[in-house]
Image (cartoon, rainbow, N blue to C red; front, side, top):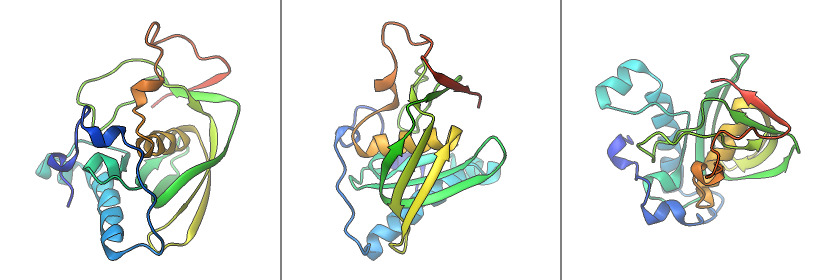
Length: 184
């Protein structure tokens, strides 16, 4: 089971590396890691489990965050209609995206970043993501709103990009043109 001690913090060199593709079909070890990423995110959202193990709640986690520089992510999040998006993917990539942008009005956070970094993080409003599930089957997801933002945040981790890299340093709350504000 992944705990907060397993999650590396901002400044660790692995967080700035481009992660390697996972060889498919996935090895038992890669499957174990991918399962544990999703298990952490689910457990962290369960008040009893998160309190018992001291887990910080998260809605996504990428393998580089546990110091494994491989292209694996897990997301467990509900959209504004209450639909659950719960996926653990190998080699996810954004294959298309909207011109329109979106951002979280509350800003973004990250399990690898302990302090709050205020500011708007511009993202694509809609993305299509392709990846492979735990069994190595191709998955194609069309996402919008919060799930789209979470997938972009986690895929950024695979490319050594942190959410605050997107924030305008001079004016963190500068309005983002043609963007949909998303409350969370």
